[in-house]
Image (cartoon, rainbow, N blue to C red; front, side, top):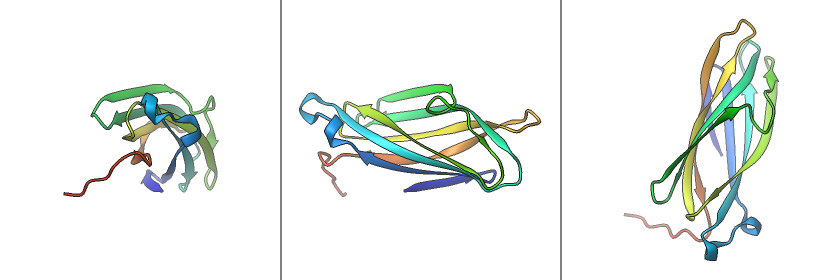
Length: 130
């Protein structure tokens, strides 16, 4: 698991490989990732937008931006959390994802919280140590 806290909002990500949706012979590798967003602060916030940077094993970067997550813009009061699962296909057997969420307070203040960088590793990836 990977975790990062920004301005009392904790984001934890757990990626996992989906062999049933992958086809290594056709250069298709699919991961799911489970995200938990916890409001450990004292102010209510709403998740407005997401931004992902996805880099495959060849260094190719793909950016994804959009409103909310999984069709929702959850409101998190102090002590509340929101969880969701999504997926990411790649044409290489490994990669890295990192990003941020744009949050908004009831007063209209917008700020970014970091999503920790996390590794996408399939069983087909050979690991080499220097």
